[in-house]
Amino acid sequence: MAVATEPRPWTPDQPIIQLIDVHKSFGALEVLKGVSFSVKKGEVVCIIGPSGSGKSTLIRCINALVPVTSGTILVENIEVADPKLDKLALRRKVGMVFQQYNLFPHKTALQNVMMAPMHVLHQDRGEVEERARALMKKVRLTGKEHTYPGELSGGQQQRVAIARSLAMRPDVMLFDEVTAALDPETVKEVLFTIRELAEEGMTCMLVTHEMNFARDIADHVYFTDRGVIVEHGPPDTIFSAPRDPRTQEFLSQVL
Amino acid sequence: MDVIATWFKELYETTGLNFTVFYDPYDWNRYIHGVRMTVLLTVSTIMASLLIGVVGALLQSAPSRIVRGAVNGFVVLFRNTPPLVQIFFFYFGIGAILPAGQDQFGLRQPFIDNVEWAIIALSLFAGAFNVEIFRSGVEAVPKTTVEAAEALGYTRLKAYIYVILPLALRVCLPALNNNLVNLLKTTTLAYAIAVPETLYAVKQIWSESQNVFEMMLVLFVTYGLLVGILVWIMHRWEKSLRIPGYGR
Ligand SMILES: Nc1ncnc2c1ncn2[C@@H]1O[C@H](COP(=O)(O)OP(=O)(O)O)[C@@H](O)[C@H]1O
Ligand SMILES: [Mg+2]
Image (tube, rainbow over the protein chains, first blue to last red):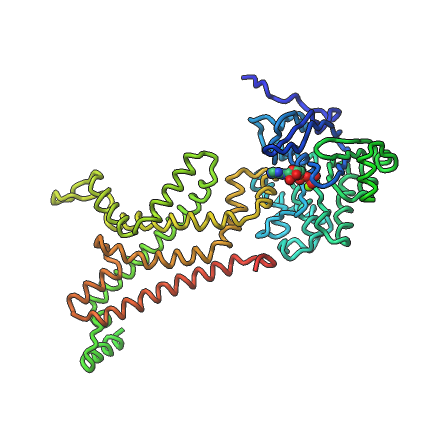
C-alpha cells in the first residue's frame, strides 16, 4: 500500500533542514511568528538574539521536543509536524546538546555514551563500547570513562554530552547555549570540540551567546527577536555591517 | 540443640517461665513453620507490591485518561480502607463466589486458598502505597533529564526503565523502606483467615500451654529480628545504589 506521507528520498544537494512559516504558541503567547530558513548539509548555522526571543523553542521544534502550532519542518525530507511522525527515525538523524548537559547521573561517562545505541538501536555491546571509547578520546576525556557525571566539571560533562549525541551517528547536531552554564575557562574546551566537529563537516545549528565564536565558525548567522528572524547573512555582514536597528542595538550590547 | 532444650526445661522448673517452643519439638516445629510462613508472605508480597508500584507509577503518566483514572481509583480504594477488611473482602467475599473444585471427600476445595488470598490482598494493599511512593520519586526526576533521553530516541517506556526508574528509586527508597517494614508487620493480619503464620502458630501454642507472657516475648523478639533483617537488606540495597558525586 502506497503511503501518501512517505518522504521523497533525500539527496545531499537538498536542504538537510528546512523550515517553512513555522509558528509556535504556548497558550496565548506566540513565541515563533512565522520562521523560515534552510540549512545545507555541512553548513554551520548560528542563531543569536536576546533571551526570550524563541531561540530554544525554535531549535527544540526541529527534533520534535516541542510540537509546532503550524508550518512545516523538514529534516532530510521527514515532516516533523506529521502526527504520524516516526520519532525514532527523526532523532537518529538529529543530535541535541543542552545548556544543562542533562547527563544520566547514575551512569558513568562511558555508559552515558553507550546507552542510547544499545537501548534504542540495539547495537552490539562490544562494537558500541569501542565506538564510545573512541568518542571519549575525540572529546579528549580519555581516562574519565568510569567517572560519574557528578564527579566531572561542567565542561567535561558537556563534552560527554556531545559524545553521547555523536554515538547515535546523527547527520545534524543542535546545540542550545551549550556553554552558557560553564565557567569561562571550560568554555574554551567545549568550543574547541564543537569547532573540530564543524571542521569535519558535521552540519551544526548553534544557539549561542559566544559572538566571537559564532563569527569565527558560522557559515550563516540568523538574528532573531520576538519570534521572527530580523536579519540573516554571512557572519562578516551581520557582525560588521548589520542593517536592522534591532540587530545593531543587540550587537552593541553584547560585543 | 540439646543444651538449649535442657536449659529452658530447667528454667521452667526453677522459675516457672515456660518457653515450650525451645524444648518441646512439637511446639518448635509449629513455631518454625509459622516463621517460614511469615517469611513467605513477606517476600512474595514485597515482590508483588514492588511490581504493582513500578507499573502503577508508569501508568499514572499514561496518555490514556481511562488508564490514569483506573490507577488512581485503585490507589484510593486500597489506601483508604483497612487491610483487614480487604483480606476479608477477598477471602470471604470474592473467594466464596468464585467457582471451586471438590476434594476427595466431596468437600468444597477453592482454587485459591487462604494463603494465596492473603498474598493477593496484602500485595494490593502495599502496592497502592508503593504506587504513590514511586510516583513521588518519578516526579523528583528532572524533566530535562527525561528530555535528554527522548532526544536520544528513547520511547516513554524505555526512558522509564533505563533513566526515570533508576533515579526515582534512589529518591523514594526511605519511604519504600518504611512501607515494606509496615508490610512485614501487616502480614500478621493473615491470622484472621487462619493462615498459619507466626502469630497464628504462637497463639495456638499459648492457648495449649497457658504461657501467654512467654510466647508474647517470643513474638516480639521474632518480629523485631525479622524487621531488623529487612532493614539491613534495604540498607545494603541503598548503599549499593549510591552514586559517586550525586545527591546528598
Ligand atoms: N513550555 C513552555 N511553556 C510556556 N512558555 C514557554 C515554554 N517554553 C518557552 N516559553 C516561553 O517562550 C518564550 C521564548 O522562550 P525560549 O524559546 O526559551 O527563548 P530563548 O531561548 O530565546 O531565550 C519565553 O517567553 C518563554 O517564557
Ligand atoms: Mg534558550
